[in-house]
Image 1 (cartoon, helix red, strand yellow):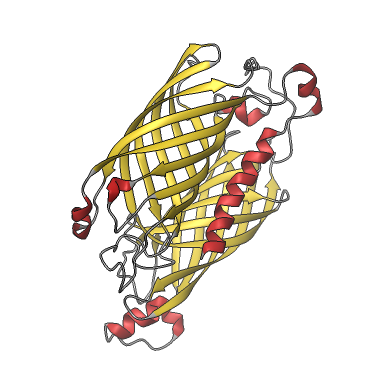
Image 2: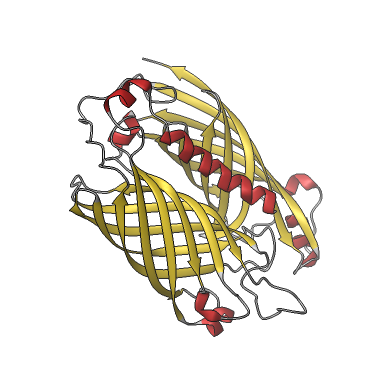
Length: 381
């Protein structure tokens, strides 16, 4: 489990490192890096989504420090997204001082998207995804009151809306509000997860004078993986493998297999939309049906075919794929027919890519899958 979560973090870290590098022509005109150091203080509380978690109600601080790079239009996608900030965060919180939960230490890469065109006073959305260490996990004997999380190593997800005000050329003040989530994707139960809502304020400082922003109208040369303005339809086939821990319910862990086919059309330099079809085999369904004393004739009845709508947000070699769909059949659908998938895709070549996918039902996380896929492009203009 710890190894798979590390893969999730390292893929994000690899993407951050790739985007630090710039082409040789730009290096001659501008500094190679556009680094900032940013510190923030948070104050918040748990968002309780289960009755059993009410006993942990409290208000508490959190602290973070970021090493980040302010993009300035060196690559085409940077200008298209209004010069986002990319970086890595180190996060700490005492989590209210509850001895059952302990403290949290997290490290996660992030991308910070401006939502308006004003560089001096911008509204932003910050998305971070990485790893967290919860110091005290569930133990049936020694820590049975910690029923939130069953593992030390967890995924960390940070979602924040923020206001950034440029006080001086190298100094920026930040005020934000958002949610930070910690869980292990049902790889180890219990897995209620921890949700923290907090407001924060902080300062960001350019290590060296910042680079000037390149004119958005003068787009730089295209790089591999970037949209060239031609009309494409692509078909992607991917396979993934996940794991669900149900040791608390039936004393076993189960594999989840997924085969997905997406047909996508490029609609802009930033987006693709399309339709998807997938088939899932969840090994835990057999145990759930047996526990409910529900009869089934063969494993074929456990397959869950599904149809979905797909949207993909493109960022150079990295992209985010969102699917919203419905299971068309399946003997065990107690989680519901509607499902959502959020995938981070990393292209190794123009056709071959890797994926990390979170699958949920009605917003409740079900499992995390790791897979590979292959894309075929068909140009019709």
